[in-house]
Length: 556
Image (tube, one colour):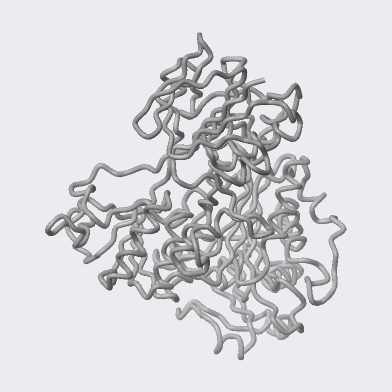
């Protein structure tokens, strides 16, 4: 059995290693165009930022052994050809034509695995080829950044794109004491991951850390002097000085070889595969960042280039090229990243995506602590749940905070994949002890908020909608029910329409609240606003809403 794998990244090497475990006698060859097979690309920002000391640390085993060409040959009996390019796939003859060190050769296969990954999008801008323009997609780009820093010329950087890589790179460069500006085309950062109100939490944190963020802006030109980056022009007018321009505007599936040999390409532009990760050629399998997946919520094709998915693909392919029948059901897009001290995660659909797909959407914003408030070290988190109002089925979640969000996003990811509803989530039997969570976890609180909204007990208005009402001069009452201490300590809305009555004094002062006006209740995180709404309902008030998420989501 001859198995040839094109691509020495997460998917390709996982497929090769899995195939070896299942078939000790197979002849397995991996072809890798780069110098570093088995490199954990997701670690490159941490290498630039000094968290990871050596590039080889990104390809070591748990035991500290570097997974280089010799490692795979000695331990796995897998031939890895590094710095080798594939020139052509000849499906008729079942051979791969390669070029290594200037010499051409052919490698025959019984099964071929395509794991070519993705390639970074490079914007067609004036002077885009100037020295100092990088993507941080390859280790060579990381080395270029560190070389500039070592030479003492890297003082200011512009990052084009406020997505995952862009924000991780912003932190890495900030760790090097570089002045960073992020330019994002859309109206908020992380537009593919978060809705606006959750993204604003991230932007506020970036500002606290000294990162300048320009949203709704476009880099129209890279300014170069003597062939080197000197700055950028934004929106054709404003110039920003820079020694480095990092393009972080996404990636495209690497499908050139697949197209050239006539394999079917899907509607996302990635290679189309079936549930066995088999292409339109039964002898060729494909996985990782070069293929499209099925969204488990919508049932539609989606392009989702994530390392977690690539590794799963590799295992399944390794099974199937050695006689197995493993299948891959699809993805829901679970993603997590760290932005300085802030933990940011999402899974499933955003509210915007769900509405565009025609769902009758119900959402819940729920700020809270990550553990019991009296425990030292408790930190805030902010949760947004998205569900189908008709069925209660969970559609997505977003979480941002200084506290623990990883375990909670994984709970929701599991729930979505199992078809759970907000009622199911509200009754999940989660572990509790004061060092780990509140007695009713903030995630379960969020599910209960969604249930209350569905049942008509909790009517809300977003901070953006409230800001528009205030700007229009509407005759409303903002009922701030926080304590005097909270009012002094935290953000507040300075407006003559604010009426301050602490919650514990609400019943005795209810006659001071006009019944003929719209009442919008404010508290710090939203929970007491719900309590106030129910009190006012008991006194016959009809037009009462709460600002959802409380002042934790007031950004002005």
